[in-house]
Image 1: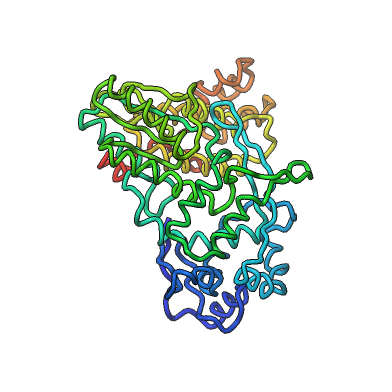
Image 2 (image 1 turned 90 degrees about the horizontal axis):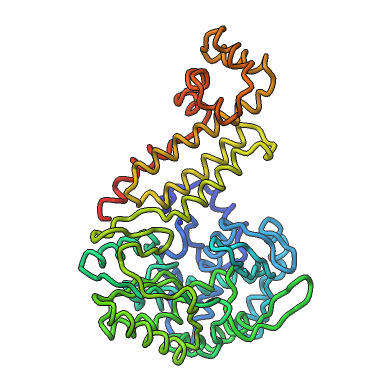
Length: 474
């Protein structure tokens, strides 16, 4: 959830000066790094001669420019101070020298985050913390410096929020493990993981590789900065709010101890952020692993295992990251829950209550279909994608039929699309329901698949076929 080419070396002077103008850093530092690649996929831009000088690397011009490019690309809502990404540069320029010096002196104090609650697919709620744009920028700059220190030591079975790793890689590893004969899975759920991270436990693990006390101090301040809920500041004594750039790396640093413990025990596992599954070859050993890992998480990491969602299951039918793995070969399919969620969203995009033009409707639909296929295209389900295609086309025909509304309009539009006059008038007068009319001969003859494609509809089946290289190792 992607790489772009580096800019050519013969860029015009105007382009270069434009970049410098958009920089938040002081003049006189080294030339800013290129903006064309995601920050996490690139090496550290500033050398760190001494481990105690990490903060100098954080606030260096090249690192801050890369961080600003990433924050600006991500956009996002404003934090409690109300400053948007578009307004930030004008606000930050006259103050940056002071902020930078505060970071170097260890006196900078982050602002609180803004609490936002979103619905989870399983019916619960997830609480996000939206930092101010300035704090997102500083967190991103810290992330770019800490990632090369921590990421190379992470487990190969950890896939979440890491350079050159993805949910697809995690799903493929689950499949490969099942094919090795592991028939039982310990599927564990950490209850409100991001809200219950113990600050002292996390900070002690960061300090293993970070000796710059200023960096440790500002991370600790971010953890304790508090949260604004309806204008009231609430203290945060535990947790690392989801919504800031630094939060995923902190989660991986904390859970790396779990990864090491599982590797020490010789247990195959796959982890994506706080979602993980552990594999065994017998039900009895799976029960033992479930009990011992639960104790480890509670005693050593002070995390809470959700007993209602944690279980031992057979590997055939286990669900992970929106996929379900079936049979002894671990065939990857889309879970029924995600198919239902997909259909709900399509109905919203094609619903009559959404009063937008067909051009806007098709544009939003096209974007959603490409994103959904890009993720779930790993599934070996051509028939599902074909069936969904047919259903979407029928919904769109129904949508057009509703928009035409009047008998004359319907007859005229059908004739314009090549339907015979007699048939167009007969169908225009029909009192049958919208859904039924979307499958009549006239609708099929007039609003053909090719015509819908010309209007801007993309085919899930075609998208699935174009992703064949993605499935070759799955």
